[in-house]
Image (tube, rainbow, N blue to C red; front, side, top):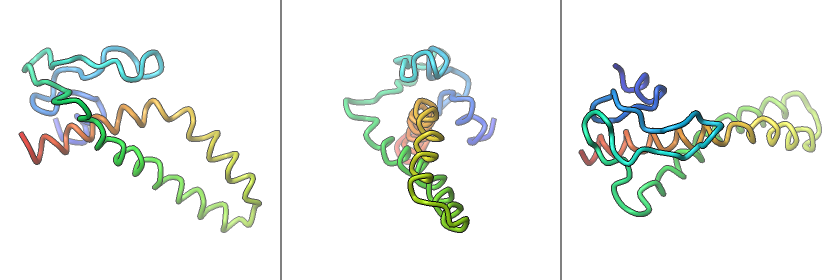
Length: 114
C-alpha cells in the first residue's frame, strides 16, 4: 500500500495493516488503540507526542482557508460572508482534520525516527 493510501485509511505506519483509531470519526474522534494489533507498534511514544500534529492540522486548515479567502476577494463579497462561510465549512471538518493530522504526524515521525 502506498504512503498516501495508508494515511487515508488511517493504518499503522510500520506494517500498514493495523487500525489506529477504534471508532468512526464522528462518534469518538480521538479514541486510539495503544498499540498496533498486527505489529505491536506503540502509537503514542511519550506524553506530548502529538504536539507536532498541531502544526500539521494548522497546515491542513490554512491551505483551504487561503484558497477560500482569495476566491471571496476575487468575487468582491463582504468580509462577514467570508467569516461565516469559513466557520460553517470548517467546523464539521475538525474531527476529521485532527485525526488526519495525528496520522500524518506518526508517518512523518516514523520516517525520521523509526
